[in-house]
Length: 75
Image (tube, rainbow, N blue to C red; front, side, top):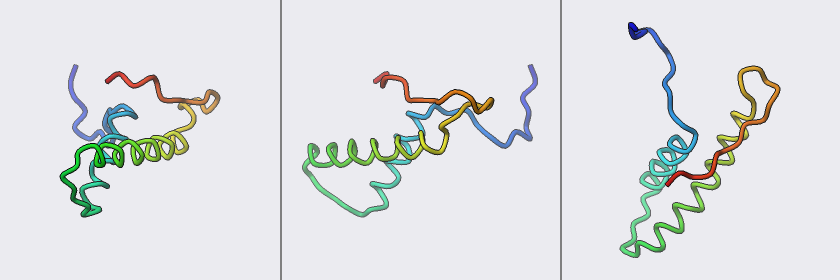
């Protein structure tokens, strides 16, 4: 199957998008700590917020009739 080189979107799961955006936000915040448990706690807090924003923005499927939710984390 030929690949559409003019495709303007890309396939990414909501969980991966939330993770990537959370990492970028934490890196840009400039906060540095050697305590990994504090960093992880901050990551989890920001990740939950980012997931909520993504879910709010992508609440419905293409047919706009059924709500979409995050599946259980597969990590």
